[in-house]
Image (cartoon, rainbow over all chains, first blue to last red; front, side, top):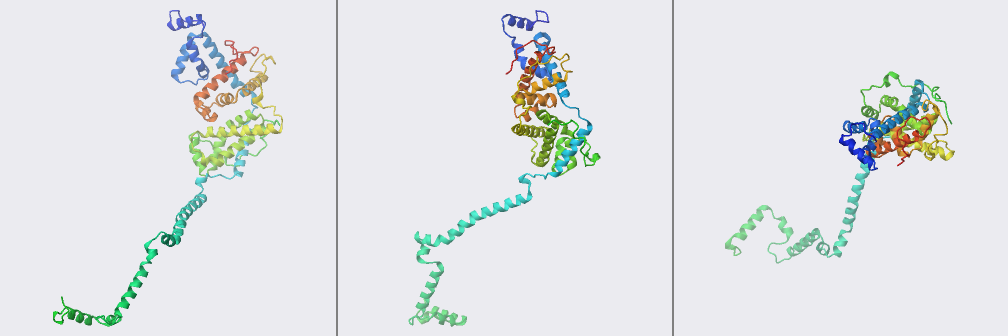
Length: 213
Length: 220
């Protein structure tokens, strides 16, 4: 690196001192990775200005950036030269062949957009949920009495409510069938009409017959 | 294997009404793609016309054969057509398409090299000897241009991809990073190292012009 500006420029003076000391100037190292991007005009304005300011005072980096810029130009030229020339007809023919191939191929819809598949998946999911709930419930219902009896459930031990009612009715019928019941049998009670029941009630409430309260 | 560059010229012209497939620059790729998803083939024809050169050139750089590059171009567009509905829009259509094309080209080259000794197996090739020829006008000389192309092909895979996409196809570093599946900073670093390496190589070519300080090849 050699100074281009007056030596009283602090940046140049610092760079000189670093060169004398045998090291590469810090600024050159800092901007080294930006030179290629600067040569390719790929830096933003602020970064480009920093590199431009440095290159103006640093001959080594100026030469490096020139070489990189020319390398880029050569690359572009080389690519152009290595490509066989293409006529407009070539591109039209390529487009035709591409579209012809496209027409031969079916479209692929993503799985979540396929309505049939979506419906099938929804149905399968619903069936799975239903099965997961209904089957255990049905099994439980089928096994519940035996399990309850084994577990000492009162219903299982004493019978169901309807069985208890039937037994109670039989007991009442038996009781009513006894001769010493002043009310007679249940069948006889059933034969009484409303008037008879009223008369019977009045008779029972009448203190004169010795049975009232 | 090499085929004339105009080998496609005998093919029939597109069957689509040309007026209907005219490229409207106001319609960006995203909007066209929305129409394609709805089944609009004309919109897809516009996308093909807009991007076929990029796709073909990329494929050609990997394969160096017109017929193979055409097959890869076809396959890339077919894949895009078939799968456009699942394109999430996280990158541009061009980025997505180029990714597909590079993937297909690499697969194509790998399959080809299995069946024959592929002279274009670039990854195994060293930088060309700059003293093998003595061109007087370096870049005007087609052979030197070919040497430089070989030098690019001999770069590490990611550096090569970055240089080709950036320098030859003019993609932004953001697009390059998406295609190369790396960060933008990484893409820029690869570009920097690749360019320095090529500059160093060119500096050793007789009568070469990148005459910066004759640095030793500083391959990372």
